[in-house]
Amino acid sequence: MKQLVNYMEAAVREELPVLLSQRQDICKCEDCLYDILAYALNRLPPKYVVSERGHVHTKVDFAEIQHEVDITTVVLQGMDTIGKRTRHK
Ligand SMILES: [Zn+2]
Image (cartoon, rainbow, N blue to C red; front, side):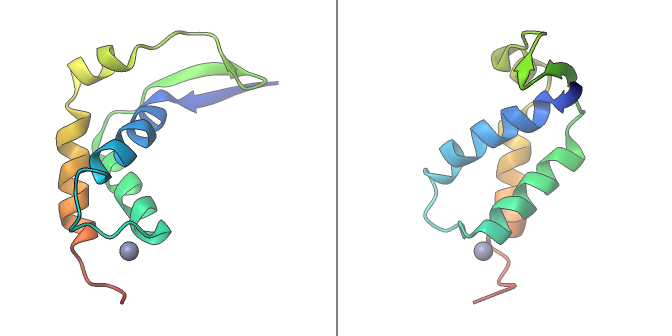
C-alpha cells in the first residue's frame, strides 16, 4: 500500500516546536498549532515522496529543503499572525 507523504509537512512539523520553544508570547494550544501548520503549508511548496507502509523510499534532506525555501521565516510569520491573535481566551 503506497501513499504520498508531503515531506514539507514533516519538515514544518519538526521545525515548529523548536521555534515555539524560543517564544513565550505565542499561544501553544492545539488549535493554534494546527492553524500555524496550515498557514505555513499553504505558503510553502509541497514536496511529495512515495511512502510504503510508513517507510519513505526517497531520502529527502531537511537541510536541502531549508536551502530551497525558508521554512523558518514562513513558520515565524505564521506564529506572529496566528499565535498573537486573541481568537480564544
Ligand atoms: Zn491558541
